[in-house]
Every structure is written in structure tokens, then in C-alpha cells.
Amino acid sequence: MTAHVKPKALTDYRTRDFRMLIDGVWTEGTGVIERVAPGHGSVVSRYPAGTKADAERAIAAARKAFDDGAWPTMTGAERSNVLLKAADLIAARTDELAFLDAVESGKPISQARGELGGAVDIWRYAAALARDLHGESYNTLGQGTLGVVLREAIGVVSIITPWNFPFLIVSQKLPFALAAGCTTVVKPSELTSGSTLVLGEILIEAGVPAGVVNIVTGTGLEVGAPMTTHPGVDMVSFTGSTAVGRLTMANAAQTLKKVSLELGGKNPQIVFPDANLDEFIDAAVFGAWFNAGECCNAGSRLILHRSIAGEVTERIADLSKKVRVGDPLDPQTQVGAIITPQHLEKIGVYVDNAAKAGASVALGGKALDLGLGQFMGPTILSGVTPDMAVAREEVFGPVLSVLTFETTDEATHIANAIDYGLSAGVWSRDFDTCLTIGRKVRAGTIWMNTFMDGAPELPFGGYRQSGLGRELGRHAVEDYTETKTLNMHMGSRTNWWMPR
Ligand code: NDP
Image (cartoon, rainbow, N blue to C red; front, side):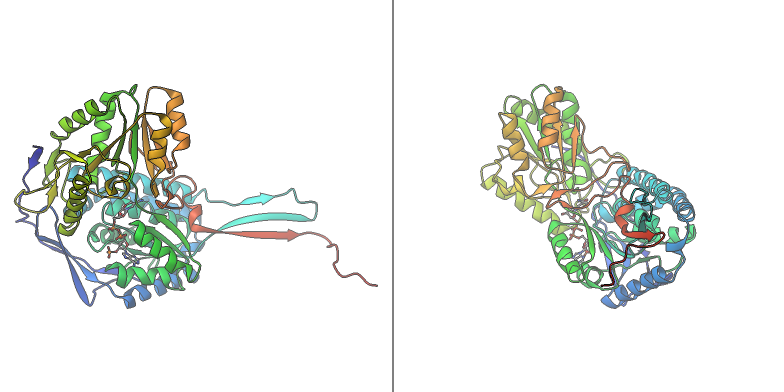
């Protein structure tokens, strides 16, 4: 049994009606999308069901704001000040934004507040970078030549985000695009659009001109797809599943747009017998159950040295039983609801198939009935082998697969023998062991004796089918730029044409 917190019905809550933002105007849709709170079972938000025509109007507005508007030509300091003001306004509306993310996505309110704090920090970091965006100069090309390499905003950027970290993920993209001087069309997930639409209000108040940020709600097929094919868009920044990421890249290829993709992960934590196991057990529980495992960075594969596998699995199961699962709005809750009933079913199928393939269910394995909403408690599968689907595919739920190894080579082989390469953890007190794993595992982030730590200064993204490009870090603004060479000549040129 795990610890449960029964959800309380949202009896006092008035469903919020949102409009979308196109060219500075709050716009109704022709239809409405209703969001049922996954932890409470009642409708919490209604967003416009945007259409292809809405997406095209938003792209046209962003195009005009880029080609003729003030935003791209402002000084870096001016854009930076707007971003700093936005950060202050986000901080001031933390309660409202965290509440929306918690009820719409089902994540625990305490965690949603933490994500808002992280987002504010990212907006401030992007504001600092806005003032430091610069190119290069070459004064070494001879007396007659000066080379200047400019960084120019790439243009109109489509930003498409998923449901699992609604406010945090848009904050990993939008402030950097704005810092560079780009204009944007943003499409949040149809399941969790509320906080992104509030962000639209914040950006207007902060001084972002009309058309610079457009937010169109609706489905991926209706609104997202045109944002990846339209010739008026210069770049697509997408976070979501690998399947849709692949499609996005193919769509963008028709007009050769730049793409930046943050996709799925199946992240290993490799644990050696000399590790500080007390520290690791807590990190394993955090890595696996944070955001109910609906996290691209989830530490969903443990690769344990055979000599400690039994003891470690038992200790992880014992601690997991104390993790509080339930009402996203209870401040004590650590694991909230599962995003949709269909997704809960998909997670269950993974567990059932793993059991059929020979894995043992060491903890959980079934949906929890807490009266309202849909929940699943921590589920641990032991005896998982590298060939099983549950060891290779992203379950995106609270399901932890335990595998074992004997040698360092075997551990790295298991870690690398899948299609993903987003992140990984290694646990050992031996420096050589950590560094060997750190160098050999092919993933965008390797945590050593910790897990899922981050900072705006540190680039984030995946190898192989976990994505393309990096977010955050000091190059994040450059990602939203084009490079232009100014090749300048002084004095007389050596003529090409010679008289005979
Ligand atoms: P999806 O890939 O289904 O959706 C992501 C976004 O793309 C949504 O806004 C969706 O719209 C939109 N979309 C869907 N189809 C299209 C299309 N044909 N063209 C353009 N846009 C489209 O992912 P989920 O929302 O289900 O999120 C979960 C997935 O995201 C997981 O697999 C996870 O690994 C990954 N993820 C990766 C992260 C990373 O940084 N690496 C971070 C977070 C999540 P809609 O759903 O509204 O119809």
C-alpha cells in the first residue's frame, strides 16, 4: 500500500473561460475545448478550438511584426527590460499560474509552485542574454579586408509545447526567442493551455508589442501542423513525443525551416556497489515518481550492479510506499493524477505486457481508485531485461524498470542500447567510474551522484531520437538567430579581368 490523499471536489471553483491571442487581440474560436481536471474529474477550463485559419492569421501577424515592427530593431537593453518586467509579473501571479498548471495537468501544487519559481529564473536569465547577443569580427584578413559576422533574429518562430510542464517548457523557449528579436506563434497542448494564455496577458502588460507573441489554442492537427509547414515561419521549436517530433521535422523540411526538437527519454541511473546508497535511494524515488513519471527526464530505468540489486530494489519499494499520491491541490501530495484516462490505460498495458514477458511487479501495478480523477501509484518492475518494451520505450508514467549488470562495459552497453539519449545518472564514490560512464553514455545530460538537477546556465537536450539542438545555456539565444557575414573591402581590389 502507498500513502493516499483523496481528492476534494472543486465545488467552489468557477470554470475559467479563455480566449486566444492573435495580433494583440483576445479572440474567440469557432468551437470550444473543455478541460476536465485529471485529479478532480470536473471541467476547470475552456479554451477556443483554434483552426488552421486562426494559425494562419497568427503567422501573418507575427510575420508583419517581424518584417515591419519595432521588436526586432529595439536595442538588446530594451528587450531585456521587457523580459525582466515579464519575470516580475510572472512571479506576482505565481499562485494563479501554479493553480492552473496543477488542476489542468494533475501535478502537485507544491511542485507547480517550484516550476513557476524555476520559470521566473529562466526569464531573468534570458533577459541577461538579450543584452549580450553579439557576433564576431575578423581584423586578421589583411589590410584591405574587415570581416564582421552578425547575429540576426531568425524571424518568425513556431513554438509547440506539451502538457507535462505547461509553463516551464514555454519558458524554456519563448524568452530566448524574444531576446533574439524574433516574433512568435505559440501553441500549448490542448490539455493544458491555461497558464500559457495567462502568460499572454502578462507579456502585453510587460510591453511586448501586438503580433510579437501570438497564442493559438487547439489541436496539433488543426493548429500545430500548419505552424510547421507554413512558408511564413522560419523556425519551429517543438517539445513533445518523438513520433510528432519526427513528423514536425518532415513537415518543416518542405520549406527547409530550422527545427529544434526536445523529445522523449528512457533515462538510466547506473548504480555501483560503492555508491552512497542512502542518497541514491531518495534520488531514485524522486527520479521515477516526480510528475508521476510523466517527464521526459524521468529516471525510468535503473541499471543496478547485481550484488546490490535485491537490497536496493527493496529499499526503493519501502520508501515509495511512503510517497503521498493523490489530490493535486493538497500541499502534502507528491504524486498527482495521470493526464487522461486513455493515458492511464496505456501505462497499464505496459505493466501487463512486462509481467507477461517475465518481469515481476515488486510494487503497485494497478490504477488507484481515489473517488475522483485518475491515479496510479509507484510501480516497480524487477527482473526486466534490456529487450523488453518497458526497458526500451517511454512509458511516461510512474513505472520503474529494474535491470542489472556485472561490469562497467555491460552497464554502458545497456544504457546506450536504446533509441533515446536524453539524460542519465551514475552513482559511485569512485571518480574514475563516474567519469568513464560520463564519457561513454550517449546522452545530453549526465548526472553524477545526483539526479534531475538543473540551472538555466546548463544546456539541455538529447542525443539521437531524444531530440535535436539544445535549450537553455548561454547559446540558447543564438539558436534563434541567423548568421550573416559582412565582408568589407578598403582600397583598390585586385582585378579579375586583365587586359590582353
Ligand atoms: P505530443 O507529441 O503528442 O504533443 C506535443 C505537442 O505537439 C502538443 O501541443 C500537440 O498538440 C502538438 N502536436 C500533435 N500533433 C501535431 C502535429 N501533427 N503537428 C504539430 N503539432 C502537433 O506530446 P504530448 O503532449 O503527449 O507530451 C508527451 C510527450 O512529450 C512525451 O513523449 C515526452 O517524452 C515528450 N516530452 C519531451 C520533453 C523534452 O524536453 N525532451 C519534455 C516534455 C515532454 P495537442 O496534443 O494539443 O493536440
